[in-house]
Amino acid sequence: MRKTVLCIHDEQLLGSLKKRLKDQGCAEIIVPASLEELLAHALANRPEVIVVEYAAGEPATGATVKKLWDQLGVPIVMLAESGEIEAVERWGEGVLSTILAKPVREDELMAALRLSVAAARRVEELKEEISSLKESIETRKVVEKAKGRLMERDRLSEAEAFRRMQRLAMDRRISMRQLAEAILLTDRIGG
Image (cartoon, rainbow, N blue to C red; front, side, top):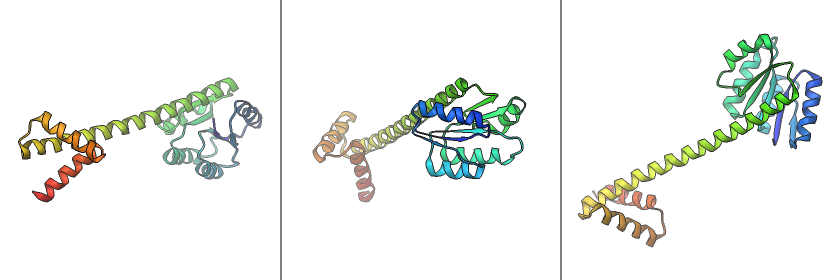
């Protein structure tokens, strides 16, 4: 983990977790003193994961965590007393990656951190893949539309229109999409 923000009040847990994270090669551990500092530090440092200890006396915890999720989208691991888990689940659904009941065993917390970071990375990969697929679909639509215009305008078969587009794109050293957009543009201007 590159950067981790820990907002934990339990000094013993905080100390052992900081040591464990350093041993695991965590580049930077940020420990804010308050929820306001948590928000400021996290937004300024863009951590890979955030660990927050829920305190029933701090009603702003939920709002702060939601702001962090909305603005950063990083995994957030919440530590809460067993009796507070249901309340945290109600406001934390869709925002928290993991909720652990205190007392938290260090091994459980480290596993939750690793799994949360891995899941977040996978989500990012999937977002990139979806974006790439959307781009491919849009390119295909534009190429098909331009091919149809060539077929109609120049009385070509589908294969002939496609070969012409391939040849023109290669000759001009541009992508098929760029060529298709140019064909459609000139057809609109000329039409």
